[in-house]
Amino acid sequence: MKKRGQLKLSFGMIFSIILIVIFITFSFFAIKKFLDVQNTVEVGKFANDFQNDVDKIWKGSQGSEVKTYSLPKEITHLCFVDYTSGEKGIYGNLYKNMEQLYYENENMFFYPLGSSQGLDARELKHIDLKKITETDNPFCLESIKGKITLTIKKDFGETLVTIER
Image 1: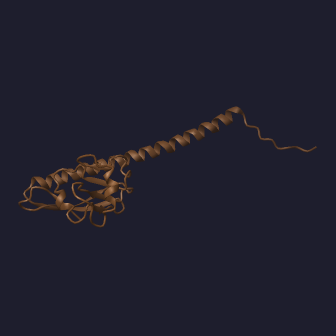
Image 2 (image 1 turned 60 degrees about the vertical axis):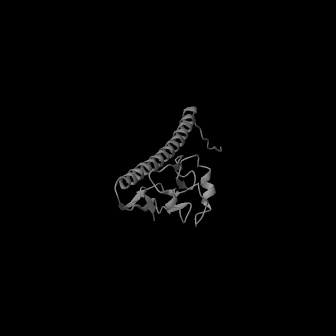
Image 3 (image 1 turned 90 degrees about the vertical axis):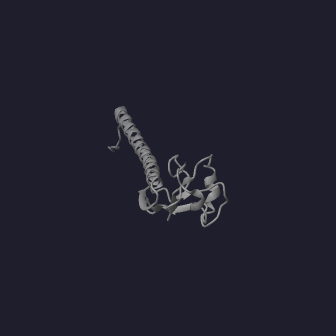
């Protein structure tokens, strides 16, 4: 007599396996969405902190401050673009790419496009965009390992703040 091995799985066992697979898939999806929300919050926090620091220097008669901010690692560059003048400088090739996010008042862009979860362009107030983009338009600052360092500066007699590398 030969005996054959037989695998018997009940309906309950098969249903349980299917449910486990569905729960694991949903868990990975939820974690990914949570991390996307974290990146969006980090970009929003950067924009608010940066605007507050610019306002602080702008309200004074003069000042200069070197600041380091955190950004999501997906963002490689922070750029300032003046769309009332043409492209120039080493990042001139990014000018046309960022133009698709320009509607009316935006002057600060995160590159690559889409890396900041829908907050790719913002208006930064109280900055001298003409002076910032005088030699490079767009004027881009590189983010290294999620950190960006820049100088916020206002000289005596100036009405607006400039951003420097």
